[in-house]
Length: 83
Ligand code: SF4
Image (cartoon, rainbow, N blue to C red; front, top):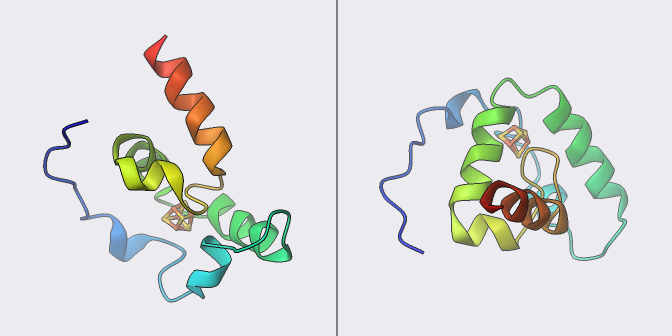
């Protein structure tokens, strides 16, 4: 999949800026970190932009918590959008 230039202008407003990256890239499933990351995402002013990026950028599809979603959730969303 070819991806054009990625808009990162919203990054400075992201609620996760300065947060522990381990929360958003947890090593184990169902970790407490996932719940904490989701709480941060829930209040994030750039959540929709983050989700759009996560569905558009291939590496974002496969790793971490983006916009409060898991890899599996994003894969389903992407399939739904393609259908
Ligand atoms: S929605 Fe995206 S930008 Fe906002 S806190 Fe969550 S991971 Fe960070």
